[in-house]
Image 1 (cartoon, rainbow, N blue to C red):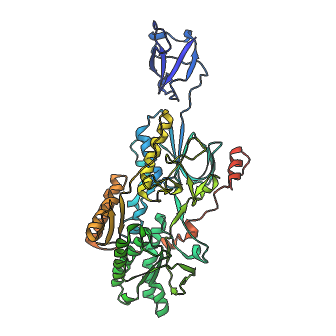
Image 2: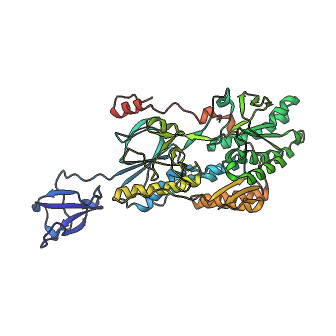
Image 3: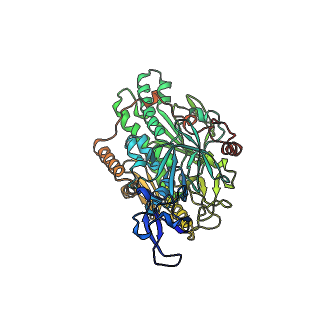
Length: 521
């Protein structure tokens, strides 16, 4: 008997005439296949009589010989963090080092910062939907579905596939990047009547809805109904809300010129936020500049104000005002995916508490990042955590991939450290404010920086070409006012897109993994 070692995709055969445990020749696996394993120290005992030594072309393994299973890396979520992690793993891992699986309900990565431009018709929906199957490596297995629970002890993720089957997906390493959902409060009528701005369907629906309000106002002879159709309310003075209000106001301002019966002065946009300042992260001067730009366009900005209740035809503000409207867009922040609550782990304001290396304390092989993780911001210290931005998510994805690989190879992990590159806010047309590397910019220079940053951050050349073409076409031909009719077939209010009862409790997850749970929670 002598030892045969598994080496990458090949079998190591001892050379005749050499002594010692390290005298080996690496041979292809029998039948042109690959040995399912990568651990060079795995030993399989075989009989010398079953091989012709170095004179044989192949080393025939003993019947029933077991091989080593490759480590299984499971990535949950295909947002900025998850996709960057997968791309890094594909580039840096040898094919035989690990199996990589991605769980996502969509077959594309959505470039969220440009959603307001889809809602306003500047960009087409497919231009910011980046196919996950354009990877040059084509090595990652994609499970179309959503993770609805994770058993950290058993190392099993419970997945509901898009054909409504529930499957258990075992893993050795899991990267949790499920993202976030829109944050709401216990406000009467909010989820029934408000629109969100987190998905491609919501953005496309809002565009159709806004244009339909102009059509309905034009068709009405009732002054009160006409006024209500032409008032629009956006809640949330952050980047998403400000850009949404700014871009859609430009759309309605351009479109109303094509409606001879409508008075452009009747169109009113309201942007409200409970915070005392608009986009405080920009600083006082740039925040004030953005507010002045919105004011010149006729957008009424109300700070320190939220909504008290929402109805089908009116919204009541907390300051007592009642605004007749059929359009309420809610962009007042985000919270971590409900999946996080199923883990039973420590959280910080709803986000998983992780180490600077983005590991979940007390659980080997568990990493979390992006909007769902409270990643310590080592550049600021004092307990600060990284904000849930695309900039951080993309860089965290790369660092987590490096740390997973380091763990696989027995190397030390590295903490996440990233100095913020700045902030950009596209207000449509030539209007923008930005703060790259601390430099405050306004107008065209800020717009060049904003669009340049977004364009460079797009993952594929196809997406870059589509977005650039859309921008150039919009600059030359102007806005498009076609209503495609999406809203007639698919509603897009918060209750339809942002909430689900499909997530399992920790007890249900455990029962499901043990084989005692029902298929449909």
